[in-house]
Structures are given as C-alpha cells and as structure tokens.
Image (spheres, one colour):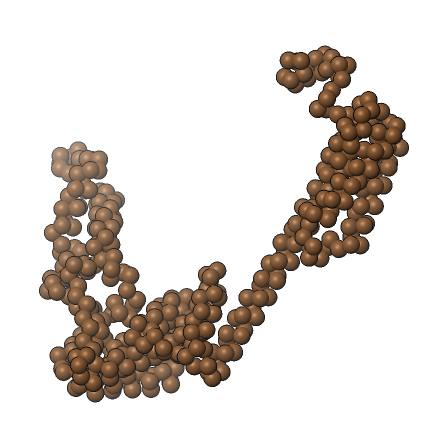
Length: 396
C-alpha cells in the first residue's frame, strides 16, 4: 500500500465511512467490549483502498495517458534536476554525455539501462514536475502537475539544436524499445516488460519524434515495424504501417529498408485479400449447394401452377413443371454463386444439375403427386378440418 495514501486524512475518513456502513461488530460476552474481528478489519481496509484508488484514478487521467518515458520525468532526481537549472547551451553539452552513455549501453545490448539514460537526456528539456510539495501525501493529481518544454529561444540557434537533440533521444528510445521487444522474455532483466508493451512504447516514442520533426524517416520506419511485428497487432495495423512507410519513402526514396518492408507489407496484404476471397467463395459455394434442391422444388411448384392442370395430375403438366424446376435450378446455380468460386466451375455445375435431374426423374417414376398448398382443393380442406389442420383451413 502507498504510504502517502495511509497518511492522507481523507483516507481515514473513508475507513470510518466504510466501517459505519458494515454490520456492527459482535461483542465479547465476558468483557462486554468490542471484539474486533480480523476479517472485519481487513474488509474495511480493502474497501477503503478501492474507493481511494478510484478517486485517484479520476484525478490523474492525463498522467495515465502519457507514455512511461514521459511519466518517468516526473520522478527524476539528482543530476537531472541539476541539469534543468542550467542554461540551454550548457545543458546540451552535459545531456549529450548521457546520450553517449546510452549509446554504449545500447551497443552492449543492455537496452533497459540505455532506455533510462535516453529518458534522462530528453527529460532535461521536456519534462513534467510537481507544483505541490506535499504530492507524496496527496498522490498524483493532474491539477498539481506542470508540463515544461525548455528547448530554448526560437530567436536563437540553440532551439534548433535542442529540438534536434531531443528528437534524436526519442529516436534512440524507439530503437531500444524495438530491440528489447525482440529479446527472449526469459531474461531476468526483461521480466518486468512485455513485448507488446515495448512495441507500444516504440510507437509512442516515434510519434514524439515526428511531433518535432515530421520528416524523420527512421521514426516512420520504426513505427511501422512496431505496428505490425506484435503478435497481437490490430486489424488495421498493416494499413497504418503502409501509410507510415509511404511517407518515409516520399522523404527518402533511396532507403532500401523502407522500400523492402513496404513491398513486403503490400504483398502480404494482397495475399490476405486473395485468401479471404477464396474463403468467402467456398462459403458461398456450399450455401448454393444446399439451396439448389429448395430452388428445384420451388420451380416445380411454380410450373405446376402455371400448367393449368388439376392438382396431383401426372400428365404433361408435371413434365412442364419438371422442366421449369430444372430451369430454376440452372438459374440458381449460375446466379447465386460467384463466378470465381473454385468449386462451382462449369464441370461442377453440370454434375450437380445432372444429379438434380436424376432425382426428379426418380420422383416422377414413383408417381409422387405435386400438391399446391397455396390453392387446396375442397377435398383437401375437408381433410384438414377432419384431422385438425391449421387455423386457416379451419376458418375456411
């Protein structure tokens, strides 16, 4: 539990409120004094902590939305605080030392240490600080946090140098996050991080770079990689990465890494679109195969009504209905299924049509009559009344 939370007087009030809302504590018969139950006290404390945590979340929404490398600037101490007191020119010289140390850690694949040094170098110019000296007791609150951007006077050349330096620190941060995300997660130094978390931080660091330098090709390239490399990449990640790479290619048309990744993502997207089309085509093909017998029966019934013969007749009316039913199956087979469906080519359609014709011929040979249930005969109506037919037959 946070020590500041325990010292907060509002937290004590919450405990009193929650304790008053709970059932009364049982009394001890021997001494007639309250016998505090450990479970009861733990329940009061747990509920008070939840309420206080919910209140604190409402007060620090902006802070929680910041990436970790910017949140950490709120808690820096020591040499970094001393750097922030120096003029921008002197600050640049000392901050470059931090960045150089980070580069050495990066080359040694100590990515977590490199990230901390890059954060300190950038945090000497862009950072957040507390305006309430009692923030440790009151907790982190947006209203008590001030964002500082000390990149120098725009009228002097130091600002352009500071902007370029901070952008390079964020770019190196992105490279370190991307490299750490590829490490085996069994490494003890990486247990507190996740691959998806590092990819998300890489995207945030690249976005910070682009806010200072929209033409930064490396930031666009790394952000594209961080979008598509996670296993849990979102559905539109590929499209967003392609947009980043197209922008990078516009600024650096000769960058081979950008061109190769862009070509691969476009190829993967085309392959996925083709695979999805084939999957949908097979699905529609199976639906058409199930719907064809229904279309056959519907076409036969329609043909029987148009033939003008008596219901149940087995003469030329049935043959006309049969022919019309077959034509209905042909129409269903040709119109209900996409032309590019692999299993509904001409040979397959002829095979299915032959199967339906043989089934219809067998039915005609058995002498099964065709009944038009939409126009029942008086005899059929009487039979429905006798056997307990549906409401329409009884009403008739």
